[in-house]
Length: 183
Image (tube, rainbow, N blue to C red; front, side, top):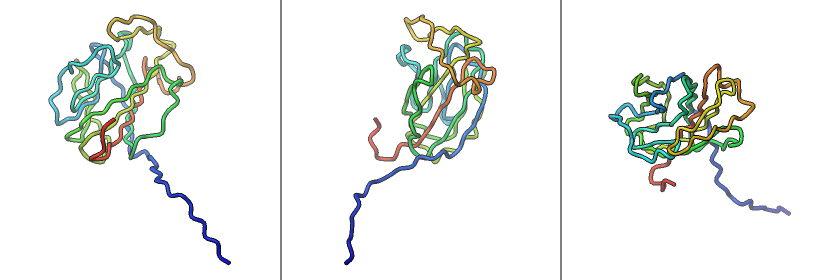
């Protein structure tokens, strides 16, 4: 006698890392950003009470005034990457941004743009997850956010990623499926 067992079907989307790029940046005017090279950038008129400032084609991170050098790791993912433990970071923030050209650059006000050779699947709507930590050796750091001046959280355990920088940022980027409601 043959016994057939039907297992429930479930769709499993495995996110995988497609590409990565690491760079150092010197923030100016307490921000640096990741921009689409096909867009003329400007200072987005957004709520300065948030860490992330975004507009079509650009996402900027506000940084403490004490940050002179930041190390940045950019990662391109096939889908939303697995969540990172937020208690291992001084801060995290998510953003959605339209990248019409799909070619990126790191940008500072004083330093201009530096082309980023990060491979993205195509132009379109992307999710970005920004994580950051601060160097315990360079601190204390104060908040760059409007109306806040309290010292910022300094986490332990990620010192190797700082590589002598005042701040380390991990930026994970993934394409949001066409036709899928952003949220």
